Image (cartoon, rainbow, N blue to C red):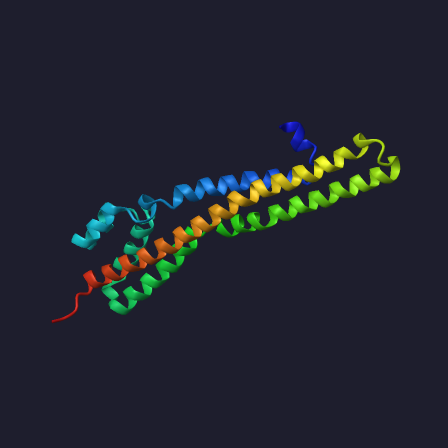
Length: 197
């Protein structure tokens, strides 16, 4: 396996680096984009019963919902307009945090096949140079270039396909969480500022 990777030429260096980086991003996002890191069910229940108690039981950085709820509750004395403004700011900040590294993952998914294609082109150039020097009578002279072309293409696709899949999956998850966080924030505003009857 290592011999095959090294036969892919210098293009394999960025491809291996991108594969490690993509794996690290995926592990990080799998960890961060879980329900208990974003919308813990217990916190949702506590906000529905007594929202003012979260200041004492939950740290703002324990989850996305705790961060948003703490921001809104901290502004409740200033009135509903300030609480809504705090909700909007907290939602924007938390959505940005949830999307962290997704742009890099999408870039890897786009660049890896292009690097594979570059390796293919470089390998084919080597093949034609070997053909010019040795002719078609010696297959061993140009088989290295063909191997380089095939390996870089395969590795580029092996990096790009899972990266693209994970990027789409995580982006969808962030969109769903952002919508749920906005709903929870609006419910909290309704709890803190009940309509006058």
